[in-house]
Image (cartoon, rainbow, N blue to C red):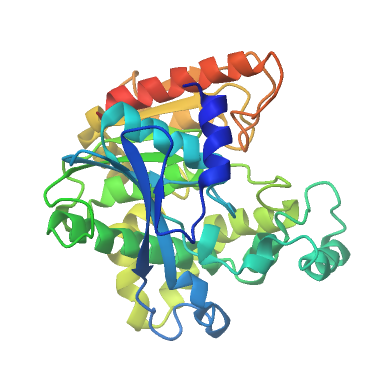
Length: 374
C-alpha cells in the first residue's frame, strides 16, 4: 500500500487509550505500553513541572511484527509535537520493511507527556494573548506553539532538563530490552534509531555518549535533522515564536556554561557525565569540538542523514557542516520533492493528483532508511 492509504487508515485506527490495536493489514499490530519515569530530585525540575503527572506516567506505542523479531528501532519525534498521528505511517513502514519492533518514545512534556489543554486552541487563548502582549509577534506566534514558547521564555533550562529526563528514560528502557525485562520485546535485540528533527539532536547525543554501552553497535538514521543546536531555526507557528527561540539560542550559546558552573553540586554530574558532555558538544561547532569530532569519526559508518533542500528549520547546509566531521561524504544526502512541503510537514496528506508524488517521495526516503536500519 502507498503512504496516503496507510496514513489515512492509521489516523482513524490509532488511540493511545487502546492497549492493543489490531491493524487491517497482516503482519503488524500496535501495543500501547505503560511507562513510569523517575521523578527527578527537587530543584532539577521546577515544582510546577513536577506536578504535571502526564510527564511521569504515560503510554508509548510499539509497532510489533506478528513473528518474534531480533531487531528494534527506537523512533524519536520532533519538537512541539502534541500527537503521534503524523508519524504513524512512518513507524508502520519501518516495522514492515525491516521486520523490527518500532518503539515510539515521547519526549518529556510532548505528545501524551503533556497536559491535553496545551494543544486546545480554546484553552490556550489566554496564554497566546499574554505572549502577544509581551512580544507583539503575530507572525510566528500561534495556538500551536504558545505553550512551548511561554515555557521556554520563562525558563530556558527546561530545554536541557526535559531532554536529560528523556535521555535517562530511554537509557532505562533500552536496558530493560537488553536484559529481557521488556513486556513484548525479546532480550538481546539489536537496536537502531530513526530520528526526525529535534529527535535527531537527541539521537546524536545518545550515539555520542553511548550510555552504559547500550548503543555500541547501533545505527542512527536521521531525517530533517543532524546539525548543532545553534544552527537550527525553530521560529515557526508550529514550533516556537521568534522571541522565545532567540532567547533560547542566546541562553545556550552565551549563558548556559556559566549557569551550570553556578548550579548546586547535587546536579553537577548531570552536566559532566556522558550524556551531559554530549549535549554540550552539540550546542555549537566550537564547544567540545575535539570530543564531538572524534566521536563522530568513531561512529561514521553507523550514521546516515537525509536533509531536505527547502527545509528552513534545519537547513541542509547546516546538517552537512556538522556531519562533515565524520569524514565520510556519504553521511548526508540532500533530497527535494516536486510538491510544496515544509520541515514540519514533509509529506502532506492530499486528496489530489499530486498525492502520487507524495507517495513516491515518502517511499524513496523510507526505503533508504529501512535498508540502512535493517
